[in-house]
Amino acid sequence: MLNKILQWLLIFALQVVVFNHLDFSSYLVPQVFILILITLPLHLSKINQILIAFGIGLLADMFVSTPGIHASACLSLIVLRMFLFSRLDLKEQQSNRMFFNVKNVGISMFFYSAIILVVFYHLYVFGLESIGAINWVSLLLTTLFSSTLSLLAIGSIQYISYGRQSE
Amino acid sequence: MQRLLAFIEQNLFIILVVILQAVCAFLIFSFNPYQQASFSNSAAKLTANTNKISNDVTDYLDLKTQNQLLQSQLANQFKSTGQGTLHYLNDTFVVRDTAFSKPLFSLAPAQVVYNSVHKADNIFIINKGLNHGINKNMGVISSEGIAGIVLNSNANFSTVMSMLNTNMNITPSINGEEYFTELIWNNESPYCLKIKNINKLEEIKVGDLVTTGKSSLLFPSGIPIGNVSSLKKKNNSQYFDTDVKLSTNFRALEYVYVVINHHKEELDLMIENVE
Image 1 (cartoon, each protein chain N blue to C red):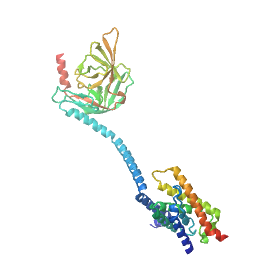
Image 2 (cartoon, each protein chain N blue to C red; image 1 turned 30 degrees about the vertical axis):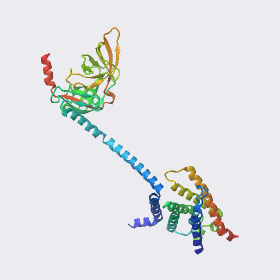
Image 3 (spheres, each protein chain N blue to C red; image 1 turned 45 degrees about the horizontal axis):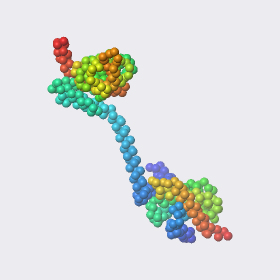
């Protein structure tokens, strides 16, 4: 569990130090830290999941000075995650108190869920940020590029963490 | 109480999400300048639109009362001005009757409950009768001009001969000058009357104002009838063929005033004695 917490801290630090400061393009604003929420243990109660999501969201907001935006997005993400997982066959993993990662649920199920959650999160955050003057083309392009980069980063982290172990 | 607690327990997760989302919304619209401005702008628009709808509805519901108020104010204005002066609503005309130190005429407001314009002899019925001091042979005007003459009254209603009646015959005054001719309706347009027998030598032109004159005790002089709309010189005749466009729109007649002459009997008697 300590390893897991250290891993989450590392992911969050990566977000704050690296991904929040990518200045290649205004279309590239990846939110990799949501991997923490995606990979939360499957046996956690709904209330705990919500409180963790809200806390992490507020923490993320502190580093980019957008009070409430990431907190709201994280809350919505965790609710979507619950809905999505209720439709997947994860009873075995839940009863074994496992985390949701590539190793435990398989690569297809992990990325099927991750793609939906990552795209949803980026669309939600960029939508909230552009309230009042939504440019749909810009919003969709930013979501597309940032989600792709985030998924690549998430895939890499999962590979580094579990790919080598399986080898 | 137990059921309420059970409900809260069952739905605690949803309640918590809603509360936390509300906190987020508060944070977003309070501490993010752009979102705050956007929210204030939308809220101001929503408030303005809501107020406008509310005002429109209130105004509409109050319209009948306002109309009655306006009518009685106009009637009072006529009564209270020392020289019996009626300022028309559109401020176009001022009717003066300076012959009497106290007003000769007063007005009783009424509403039209029946109106015909498509017959040869049109009438309309108003919601005032003998109980309100209305009697036959009283003039009726609208806020635009002349409307008709009361034919008969019962307790609560009166029948009025409209200007659009072939039996109507009024002596007009053109540009303030009396012309002893006849103003009649020839059963054609509900917007036009004809003046018979105006000599070609008279200096009148299209657009001249046609009003009531002093040869009638039913109306104060100067009540608008209309404007000369056509002036044709007929061959082999010494008279103009004159059309007058009515100032009162009889198709939309709604509120009228009955002209009450307080000294009609005395004046009738005097005129009878002279004749």
